[in-house]
Image 1 (cartoon, helix red, strand yellow):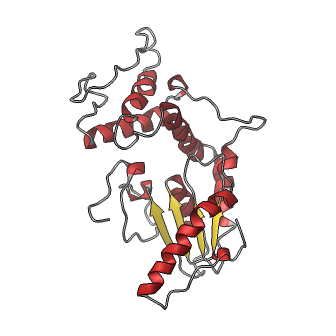
Image 2 (cartoon, one colour):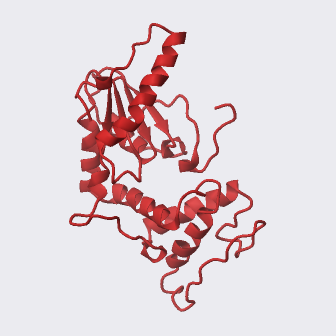
Image 3 (cartoon, helix red, strand yellow):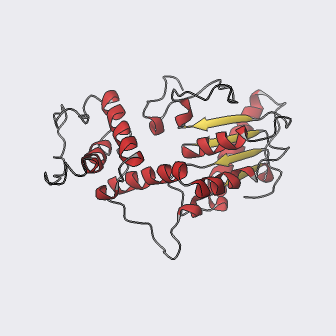
Length: 256
């Protein structure tokens, strides 16, 4: 984070709990300034971005466990029933739909592509805790798809838990949103959200005063592009364009 009068505010997604706002800013700011510099060649009326024009809302530290240095070692058996197991199975089903070489939850392990055998879950446990099958099988299949091929089972489950915690722990959710909200001022013109950060940014913008200057929300790999219903009469931000990506299990559109 730099000044508090930034024109562009970036909100990161999952897997950034060991970063700070400053380390992420050092990573993304040159790309933003360079991209705007190239755009200026086509449209000189655009304003060049300075160092103080870009701010990053870092909130990864809120996910770190107090009193520890490392990350929790999340394993398949740590997947919780309910939200986590259901979301994990949804990812699995959608990945199997888009990648015919990956068997889905209902295929009984049949596949066109040679895959390692699924982990064995003791049959005595399944009637009591059927969600364990999803916890073991889904990561084993998802990490062999083109969407999650570079992600380990442990990292996949860790990211899953970050998403679940954001939506089920009100204090954490409020603290995350506060990190983004404190950077958005009357000078802010663009808010960029990646992955879970796009949800954070969307919720923060929906809570802004209606009389403030209009803002543009740019999302990357966002679940906001998925079909969903909103309460009748709820305020919604207009969506004009989106590019699908691995975070929502759709390949990018051709030419984008």
